[in-house]
Length: 577
Image 1 (cartoon, rainbow, N blue to C red):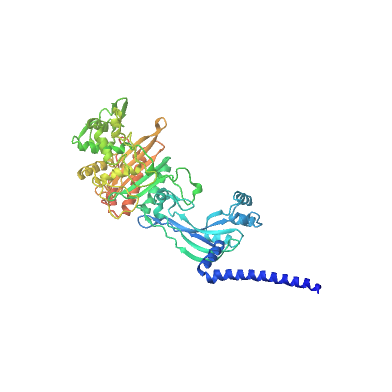
Image 2: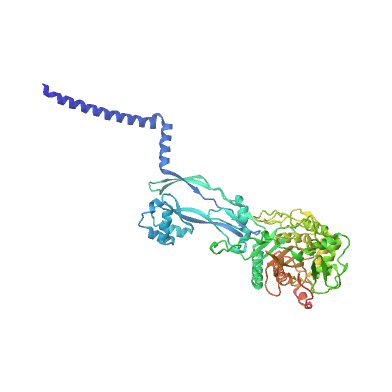
């Protein structure tokens, strides 16, 4: 009887183990029932959260950046779809497909390995940014483990270097970092969206869940420039800078009625679509950021002060004999002794002696006040990054030379755009309007700074500057009467003025009887014997103005045969200051 005990003991152990297993199964079933049935909401949420944490991912949907266009709707900056290639370095570190990947990327294998070493331990690295979709898809079709594609947008600039310094550009991440792109980045930049997808253990997307929030595109921006005139102005300025061997040049054309910038170019310029070749300064908008002494272009504003004093008219005679005048330690010379000449003739010949005598008579305060009213040294508030205000001095003590220097544009500085705005007062019958880089629906009211009669009177004098014997006769435009003023100043160096380096300027309006445009041309550092504003800058004004008036549909006041019948210009007498 005692031999049956082991069997009873073994059977008891079997029942114990079976009971424990059944208990565990019951607990498991109970837990499942609790999660799936008894506590459905909390259980489902728990399982969903756990599943999503392991497989569900969110991805950003890039937003389309707004289009920048010219006043006629021609695109200046657009966004095109591209694909950036990125990788998880963990999957590539020991991959035997690195040579294949390097070849597809167009880089040496050693360079790719070095890049992977720098990102060792990371889970993300870019292999290539902004590849063409067809090229990127061909690479991704190789299905190299750890290599993925990401859709983005790349900025493209159809006008290239012609409008680059105004439009600016973005960085690789689509953020504006120069020009209009930078100033209006918030306006142009869209709001990225998001979508969800399920990934496998290797990080590959296996199912697209859908869009959570759609991307909101950026807003478009219409600039004031006319791309047709921009191309013309760029061509003429480039030609003049290269022909004269100058360091650089700028040109600005304003709408006389609205203050809108119809064209603004600089040379040298760079192409933002090919940034590898950009040189320092290629993207600088010198017409807005760089200051120059305006020289004799300020004599027309001195004329305003003289006429406002009531002591002068355009026909008032001033004796400029003997052709030079001493002020303090300096002597100012005319190209020759003009003798007794009218005030109008003084501006036409750009007589230093005549202007100095006017300045000494009326004093520097009225001249400075006119310069201030015309916006010299004042902010233009265009919003363009790096805009300069120029300089209008306010000395506690004025030396004799400082007082007369104001009258012919020394000791003060302006930008080409600021100078164009000052001359727009003559074109708009005495109203100073804000300058705008954006297209305007209507002309702003502006501020009256001189009377309409005085503005027309000065325009008549400026027209004489482009007559046969004037310093600006090369600014004439066939079929249209124009007026303006030349300027030639010495360049400033670290030790003062340079004896053999110049800045040539021309500022003018057209047509002079009913102005539509104001154009300023600045050529910085022209070489050779003929380096003055009348020789270098005035011809650019002529070509640009002719194109601008035709594009604006301004009817010529003279027919070509009438212009051809004019007698040839007489031999030049005097300088082209």
